[in-house]
Image: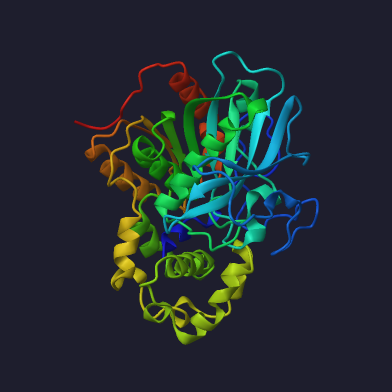
Length: 402
């Protein structure tokens, strides 16, 4: 239902290396094939073969680790594909996949700060996981050159067994935090306990939840800051805006499917027509563009009985996953393009007002004429400077009124 994410269709992260500014994400679509032509159900290496029972005992413990040799490992860096333990949406242990990057050479005695990256919407099917299709961390080369370790989660259920709980905040937030914990378990990475969480679109939603969860869920991490660009943070507003748009129904369907599979009390028939219920399984088979294409032959009215926001308990679950209800102890940077028609600037305005009202330290920066993808490039230098200031211990500014 987070059709709100719907407004997140362009949430996919950029692919490939970068040459300076943060790389804007590619348009939403089927991710390009990984070098080994991975398809749903296949595993490119046995690092993603999830053992049962899981080894380790704590969130962040490594389940499997293998050196990464894919083209997106920048010169002067090393990288690892990994599985790590996290806490699933049901509270039980799960294996989550991801990638960790680190500069080559020995780490300084105090260790390297960790940037834990949260990607935007790619789809729910396993083949869509960024670790398989191209991680595309914005500004990766610059982050590594600055001496940071970069941990990039796929999120729970994306590339690993189980359904990806798309836009379920606690699941996303734990995956983001546990990726930083996992990076610290890789001796060669030299990761410290200093962490900055950075995410775009769906990932902005994820890091806001990570910031709220960190003090209780991962108290050993020193969370220095949370940077969210075009965050899917006002789910109700985004859902209202996206539902009537046929081209956005891939996002709507993805969120309805993920919520329906995540929460036992949610019944598809309450919100979807019989034709949509019959077709909804495509979400677990195709990436975002494929799902969108599967529903383009009919108007939105042919698929929805009602907007999920207008029926319980769907509406309550959407409200539960709106970030901002809990304090974020670390300072937050929010970057938003004014011409973003995926995550609307007005929705981010509302989310920032809610975060400010909660007593959080929020710096809100708007970028005129930047759309959903362009904001990453427009804000890139300022995001990196803001991250550097947090690592240096400088006091964060707040643009909250009052």
